[in-house]
Length: 355
Image (cartoon, rainbow, N blue to C red; front, side):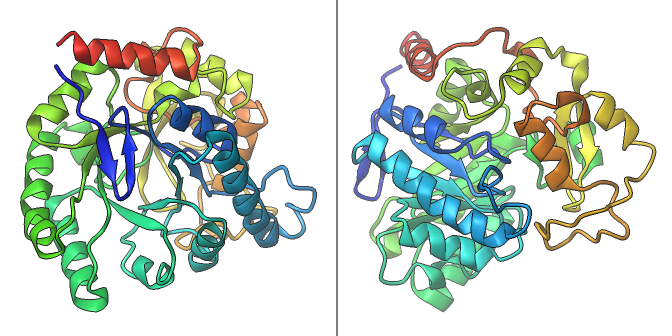
């Protein structure tokens, strides 16, 4: 199968592959720059991105806003003019401040989900920063497109469809995921259909990107044949030398078996997918007593939450994998070795070309 370059605004990606943002600290400047330099789109995660700033524990918001700027500028410098993105969750506290910091740093695109980014265009006026909502249904895409058109007279620069096999937080009910009743192919068709009038009205391409369980060239080719413009992949990039994750987290991905990949409850109020470990076993049956609140996500109430998600993800980035929430996609068990970003991208390219 021939590979059509992916055009997003003024940028052209050699490969139609976007590296999904992974927090806390899994995809920062090192991984993002490497992916962009290998022909894809590298994406930082803005979730507690300043976790290793000296004042993170005492001045969390300012540490994060400073780190957003630092890591975007670093990634852009290493990527030498190639496109760099950041993922920012609507559910995060101080969402608007995070968006504004990313725009000030000159990020090329903001990818935003974990809620509907209804007001995102308002924060991008006068900047060159593009935006892409993450949706899990044609209905959500239609509502957002209508909202952007009516309130801001714009259309998004890209739409990411996240399916039920993704890692991290999932925009579906746990029972629907477990019962395997979600037809991602149909959702892709629906989103392509509802976006078409806006492509015409605004005379711009709106690339449709498919995420969630995308593992190899065959998966990529499938979605391209379905009419998507590209894919977003995250878990496979964890087991690369350039990934910002701790070596222990990378090894946990490599060691995971199929039965180790489970659904977990998240304080965000959405189901999540992660690797089974002592942490998931413990907080599947009891609550953690919260001693410090990082004020990270809006839906979380420290008095009732099962555990502190920031603390759980901070353990992961520090390599304390038994005490950590180890987010991963449904195909994590198929990752069995450490590689480099360049080798992974070349493998995926060859697999697509062979179809």
